[in-house]
Length: 305
Ligand code: SD4
Image (cartoon, rainbow, N blue to C red; front, side, top):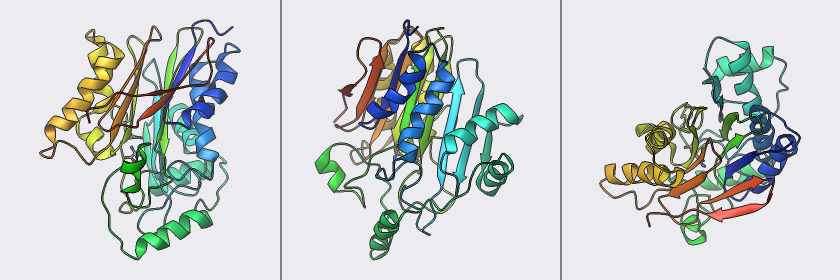
């Protein structure tokens, strides 16, 4: 039933997330259902401080979540700066299917989630609250995202055990594509800050004619360059997923006077024929690939530095 199905996702936690997606894909399930199920694994993981419940809050101590979902037909939905709902990706899908809109934000997103019957809860865990109180002592904000590279990670604010956004792309046995992306964003951000993850074309883009792309890292840089849309368009013009991700990364590096030496951004792409590619600014970006042949592959992305 799995056919040529395949699912890919960002970072080490992508391995477990892919498994949840694979449970559906291997039974002939739809790519859209698979990505929605897959990214809920890190959303629910309290030890993970950058996705869903347990995520680090903004500077006011509020956990605000961003998520998006898209399929190969151009249908998409997203929520930004959503509080008190543990699975923002499910709300994003509901926006896509139950409203004429694409993106709901803040109080409006919460109101919609409530009306749709999503349970409300406090997303700030004692551990995340403690990290925030620790951060408040210096209250320095440096907008750098984390990476799996330990030395790099240790130099980041509150980032020593952090992981990044999950972006997931799936191709199902029927040849359909879908993607999802979900995050608590940058720790200690300004209240109201929205990253790339819920912005269609920035943190996520899928086109059934070509393929899909997703990103992780400093969202501002990805938004500025319409990153995931760029990756998909480059693939449309004939670049491989690998080459397309590299070009999108180099675009970011080139625009920064400092060469983006202190920033991490990583792109991951899945072409409609199943080919996969990734590229990042810094070393240490990992991604997980799962298909009928092997379920638990974790690969290291090439990088500029
Ligand atoms: C953002 N891309 O909100 C996300 C952050 C991330 O913490 O990848 N990790 O900018």
